Image (cartoon, rainbow, N blue to C red; front, side):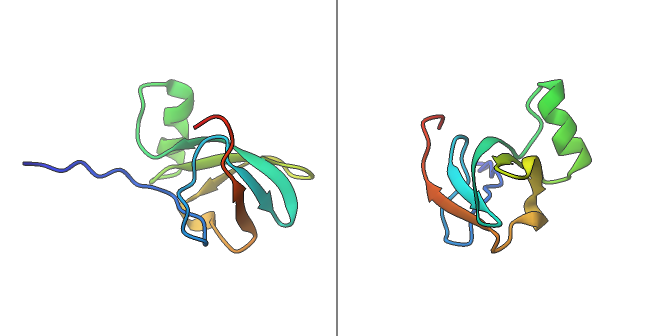
Length: 87
């Protein structure tokens, strides 16, 4: 039996990063727009996986606009606030 693992991105507090999450980034409110960890067949999403091996997620934060964060970009300046409606 083969078990298929997918990479989950987690906040420093331990919650998994999910679409629609409410966050703060460098103290500014924001939201997770999408999470992509592997090729999906959607050329727009696959571009992120190809450019950023391991994938990542797009956030939109006040004062920053849209920012793509790869697996090495998750730091203490990104904080989970609550789950949003787009899970």
